[in-house]
Length: 167
Image (cartoon, rainbow, N blue to C red; front, side, top):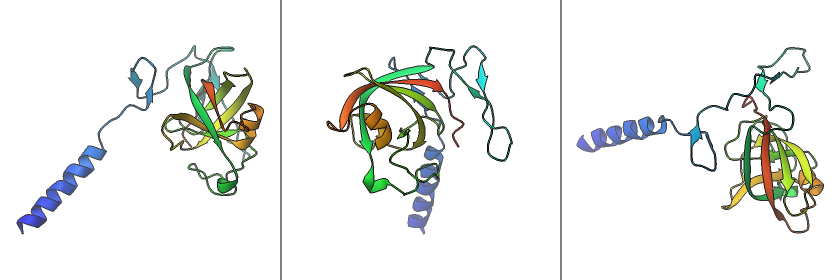
C-alpha cells in the first residue's frame, strides 16, 4: 500500500514539474523571453487557400532582424524525404525549410553562410538538430543555396525576420 502511495506521489510530482514554465527563446546574453519581442508595430498577414486570414505575425522592419544567432548549420535530405515533419507537413528535401529546436513553426529566417556570405530565406517547419553543437538543420535545397553540401556543415548567422504562429 505504501509503495502505491509513493508511486502516486512521484507521478504527481513528475507531472507538476512538467508544467513548470521554461524560457522559449534565449539570446546570447542569457536573457530569455517567453514571447517573441514586439517590433515597431508592422504586421504581416498571410491568407490560406480557403481565403481566411491567419493571425497576424510580428514582422521585422525592413533590413532589421528581430533576433540574430550564430552557430553551425547542417542539412538533412534523402533519409527523411517524404516523411512527416514535426508540424505535420511532408518533408521535401528540395525545399527552403529548416529544423530548429525552439523557434515557432512558420518563423521566417535569413540564413547567411559566414564562409562565403551567401544567404537564403527559410521557414521553420521541423524540430532539430539533434546533434550537439548545431544551431539549425536545413533542408538540402537551402543547403545547396548556401553552397554547403560538400562540407556538410557551415558557420551561419540566423536572422529572424518574422515570428511564426507555431502551427
